[in-house]
Amino acid sequence: MQQDADPTKPLRVVQWTTGNVGEQTALAILSNPHLELVGCYAWSEEKRNKDMGELLGIANMGVHATDDIDALIALRPDCVCYNPIWGDADHLCRLLSSGINVVTTTHFITGSQHYGEAAMQRIAQACEQGQSSIFGTGMHPGFSNMMALATTTACSRVDKITLLESQDASGYASADTQRSVGFDHPIDAPYLQDLTRKGSTVFSEGLEMMAQALKIELTDIQFKANYAAASADNDLGFMVIREGHVAGVEGHWLGLVDEKVVFDIGFKWNMGQHIVQPWDIDHAYLLEVRGMPTFKLRMEIHPPHDFVAHSVQDYMTLGMVITGLPAVNAIPAVCAAKPGIRSYADMPLTPAAGFVSA
Image (cartoon, rainbow, N blue to C red; front, side, top):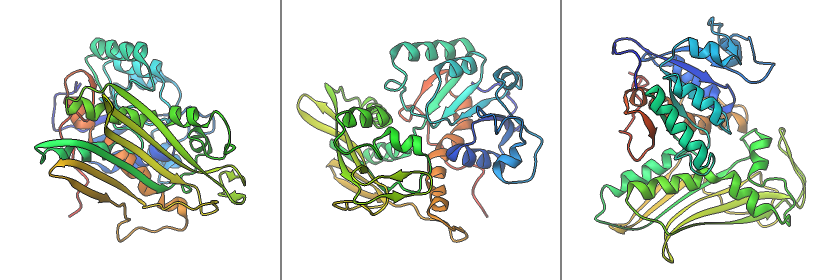
């Protein structure tokens, strides 16, 4: 619920973390005339007390990063843009119960898989107490789930939805994140399937959200994964993929009704080209909505004409933008939404208001 009823005033926003995605959401908040950046949370000692301008590589702006949650709550922001990779239910409950709305790119679309039932009940209660809302866009990015739902609006029958993220992930410079889904683990490690399953639960949450929106009662959700081994050591700068270790991960979350697969939501990632049996990577999101009629869509991400890049990591900025901006663009709608846990299934379309260049 929006705290300030004056529609002429920008919404006050706190940025929570300034990592790969958080840096892009903070820059987007600063460039949007409908939003005002008033605070920043940083958990690392090296970032605490620094001006946000310094953290973002721009001029100092008088807003300093802090790990003092009470001080950030005292700022009375309308919304927190919450961007850690793995969320903390205690932090979310403190914010929501204080009447602060939250948009997040963490492993949160429905919250059911990452947080679990008990934590989600606490989050729902915090929303009720603070009359606030939380909206999770996911981080793979979740907007592709919304594209799938939008496509079904032109269908009279939906038999199956298949959505695949097929990308070279070597430019995403986060060793912890890459290892959490299986990269650089021994190719024959007995724990690999379970590791990848736990590291990709946000895909399952996207599946659940789409099933809820389409009023499909799933009888089972299954997961399967395949792996490709590195043919040689591959130094990516931020981590080394060792020979014989995982250099490619393909996972599929399957939603079933009885024994029929009605959702296949997956990812196919590699890390560099040193792979024993190289995979075909499409560098795109591949969507098929099979039904009456059947749609096949290919979504590619390209830089604008004025984009300057000096490395693969620079190009990965595009991935950070498409992960973070669905959350930033949703801030006004979330602040105006009915209190509670919101998802793409019940949120309005949230276009890039404030970002259209003349």
